[in-house]
Image 1 (cartoon, helix red, strand yellow):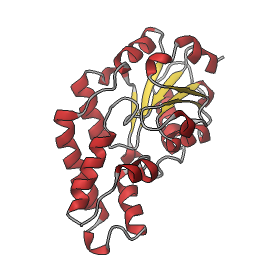
Image 2 (image 1 turned 180 degrees about the horizontal axis):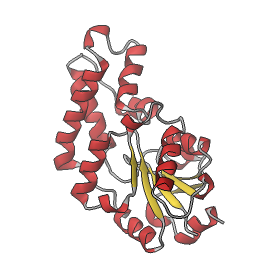
Image 3 (image 1 turned 45 degrees about the vertical axis):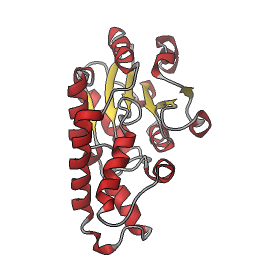
Image 4 (image 1 turned 90 degrees about the vertical axis):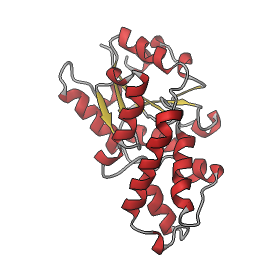
Length: 226
């Protein structure tokens, strides 16, 4: 029986991490703050928007007079959507990989720290929304990655849709960050890392590391599900 593949979104399907950073910095610029690319990838990339702003506040980088965290996050979402309407691109090889999974009756879901509206907009523009039965986004879970909640929810929702019941061990998660890999492992799922955001050394906790999705074959995925 085929299993399921659960994808992260930013950095795995969409080449959008730098758009997120630009959106954060446009909002933070009004507070006299900026995040460097090195700090974003080192400390913040795996966080939800709310958690990122909260962490900046906890560290004293974002001052109390910056305004409510929720309002900053809403403004960041607005700015990101403006950028993504014209600039967001699907990573090369993703569409072919999704079609390969569909041709082999593999079920597909997304579990992401991005907001649902952002994910839906990018997928619809790219003509890829139809591939995914389930999308779990930041606003649907109380605890984001590295906690396993999102992946547990994605599996539950796949099973709620019917068909043969899937166990966590029949799910392969594709991630681009150590936060996501830790969450997938905590959920009891198999892990594949793609080196779109970090190098292979930093993703060594994954069971398999690839440079791009075209390197991942169906026989290799089936090995997870034996």
